[in-house]
Image (tube, rainbow, N blue to C red):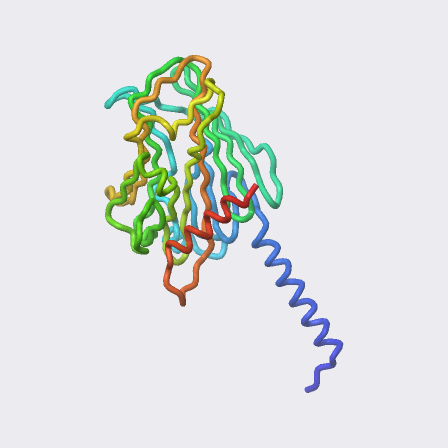
Length: 284
């Protein structure tokens, strides 16, 4: 049976068109409820504006998708007044501000005993997600603020950044402010399939006494990343912070959901982190 040249042209034209549509869909950002689809990943946003879950896609069954979840629990903050008492923020508002195929933005507000926590997020189609967190309201002295990212331990085999030299994730990673000149507060955790990059915005606020950068506080501030129960917990500790009335306490940070790696090539955590740092710096 002979196939005419015109039919072959039509077939390959259609195939090329389908491929182009799939490629365009892969590089476009989609929103369904409070779930974003970015580069084959599903990213759920919590009512408080932070990430609830990352991993899996529309082509996987629920049971298989759970195996690819990056987070053990949603990302969150703890605001401690003393060792036993902390503010319990209750979400009161969540809304998308803009929705496009290249980027979406949202705002969420939570309240607790005279304090407001306002979260502004912006997600790009390339996997970069910026967060700006503002805490304001009553005058208060925090004994400590903890920023927690509880990773799914089964998907946290590799680690890059914070001065670590190897590819495999150590049992414990520590970093404090005295290391800033040598290593920036940025790291990548993941496996072959996916991963999560975090960078804290530790740029000082210049000539503005109304804004406090929560990442730049005491000299004993810093990360401790270790196994805790069924999770691998990244815990950033600020130490004491005094927030005056009329001031805003800020915690700005960037997350990048890394692309699927190659099953044929070993994971190189340093190269992965280097590529993500470049993507971070060049996403405006």
